Length: 388
Image (cartoon, rainbow, N blue to C red; front, side, top):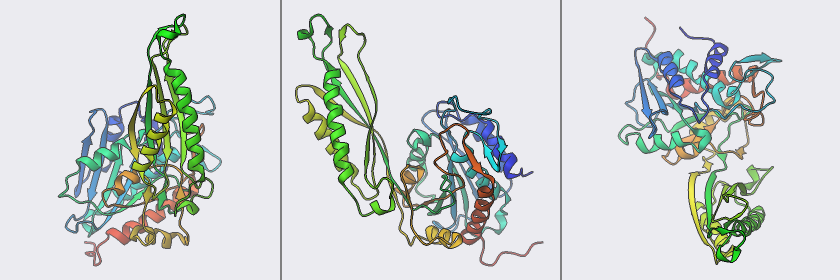
């Protein structure tokens, strides 16, 4: 029996799927909810058996590349902020919104995708309707990356992909990437009373941070062909996010670890950016041994304006312009396979990752109508069999 969108969302929110925890309980619920004749459901575990992607397929798979994928991530960020007015994992209705961790980012979209998928009659789908739900998007789209690496090449999924990120019901065809890099300065430990016997990694780290701040200023001056779609922040952002080093106040530190994130605009060269960072930090302190690692590369998204999924969504929304957003998503990883990904969903990214995260109820209703229309357009048989 299908649940209402509200009740289903409440069930999804009740599962604590912070990225630090297993998502198996939620995956089991989703698989049980979707299971019925004519539907193929696959749990695809990641390298850590406590995490799993879920792929559900309804309709004929005889037309490679045709059909529609509805995609979303099952994980949420922590809900430890003190500003919550209610239990983050218990959905609450407040002033025309549904409040709860993940209600906006992005279990609201998952609930819609699940119910639209579950309501579709597999016998009337001439082209496949696919539900792709991933793990650990919040950690750099790790589930999407594993899916891309492990999905069999001889089983191509539809190229048209709707990723249910909160876009305030806009079709979004581009987003920035997020390149996570780690710079480590290696010093020599010594008693602080004999500093000449050591080499401070933290002092080297301070010089490295200054070099990174200068590089961030350089990035602010650069523009790409797509900067105009990112009016608020039309440049690549370099953020020094974390610094760790030292063991005690009376010890010359032998290690300083600096983690930084670079949000690349579409069309910008990742390898060149990595080289800029390496060059800047090595020149900052030539006397210190410095190592630079790429911890995660979640690429930018760029889908052509004329891509079928973007055109169809814009026509349905009455949207005449293109939009870009400054956050990354699974779409960056998925698009590397040739999938044409567009972001669309209820809710605003401005309230995601914050206390009292919410999704407007009227946007959920509108989003369902749009998704149902897209399923009909991309998946229904041209000449469906009459009902018995």
